[in-house]
Image 1: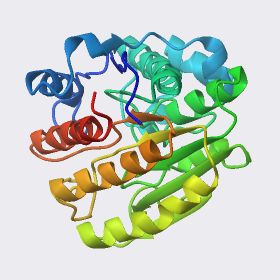
Image 2: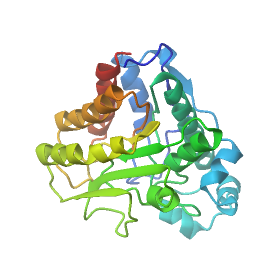
Image 3: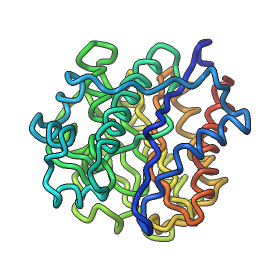
Length: 305
């Protein structure tokens, strides 16, 4: 089914980060993606909505109140911030709140229109009371629990295709029988202590398009058998062969085929999808931005917005 008129996607001017010179995280990729989507007319300006800060009630379903306060107030231990990978700043705190708010808004919009997403997110390494791997709060946990709490959805599936396993998703949500988590990731990549998901597909270093798509095709039926009311899609592009942290060997065409496979199967079944862009660390970063834009190209081809 095509999404209804009014499909939209979320962004924030806080997403870009000014980080110390030599930092490994590409902090400018979010604005680059937004510019690319508009420049190539993949999205129209009217389809972009600002990501509002998350409400406390939504954030605190997924995260410890003392941890949230330490981020908001800047009292977090420097060692805990090092585990996240960013220096604390008021901007980091505002950005984390905007990412969570945008995730909730996108998920609710997807329920209404069939498709939505945010030009950020995918923060699947954040746990209940600590952050990790460039993730402060967990947007999948926050969005999923918000939908379940207000009755917008009764069963939520997460399809996590970032090259790094979503340990935070599994740690926060894995015990619930109303959430199903599929993670397809590098077996030997970060995090080195993985937390078991409902279905983990561990792939070797150097995996190429054919093997990856075959493994994903074999895994997706378990998602549809769960009969979710919505899919939260972690469309990380770090399996790209140019990615500095990915250790896989997918091409741009392979990643687009991955996105079409997930989105077309969801669309055929009438399951709404909310997308997060996930990881991408190519050098130069333009290769990751191109891959992110291709995810939106795939969505446009499937849904016809």
